[in-house]
Image (tube, rainbow, N blue to C red; front, side, top):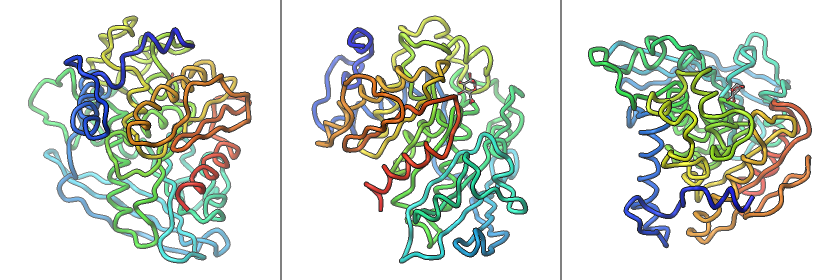
Length: 370
Ligand code: GCU
């Protein structure tokens, strides 16, 4: 494990060779530098700031979960140079509450039914609205395909089709689909800032697998998320790329060429030439709360590489005078560990997002955000 950490780019060492040694220097110099490296070489450059014509429309508002929650369907609308777009958000707000409550937002890359208020599955393990509401959290969900289709379509559809300049050839650092979904997560946060039932300062963003990669990039870019959770996010998510088992950069770029910028393909089989590794993505979440989860049989994602990456981000939490999980032996299955701002578990079983995982996220959130 030691050897692998020694091969990583130093999260604190700037491109000019200087090492940052205070949170002020981190925030002023190294953090922006690392975000730029991820934009340029990995995820691509997203449109900055709020889009024009951003507005929110509550389409339905009804009692749900046997009276325990109010269920709202909201449409988020925006405009760009090539027209207008919109996507739906589904939100459950506990009825029993004093003031605004903390919330979990799920980036839903599966379970389309979870979005359908006509056939809600309130206890679906992928989006267990009932479990979240009974623990005092609001539960919000949006669907990745509603933001940008998960296909290699030449970026003609979804938010790319609406926001991208059409006249010029696509630059090699143009944003991919994961960055588009992350952009959607920030628009959801724009809405939550206007929602009186939710405390926008206590919002946790959760994603599984490709959704987990998205949660990390969204959380890195948007400091309004107080907590970020990546579940089984693997390659170009939480897992270190250098020395990774299972999926490699070449694998992911070959099967999902639309997820990242074209520049990222230069690193197929050349992980060691990347100016970043994934512990630096995790470090961008500091000083906020960060929870990484793996599954024991998910060797494609590589639990050990996810865990090592999390511990390698601890240096940056330390700059803030905060504690985080440090280098230590890989924990046994089903034994969540946490220290200060970060938490981790490896669940027995396959690549999935299950009630057990949510229970761990909720417990961690309750300790810090209740
Ligand atoms: C594929 C892909 C992974 C991804 C996963 C998912 O297995 O190779 O990188 O995390 O799909 O999103 O379910």
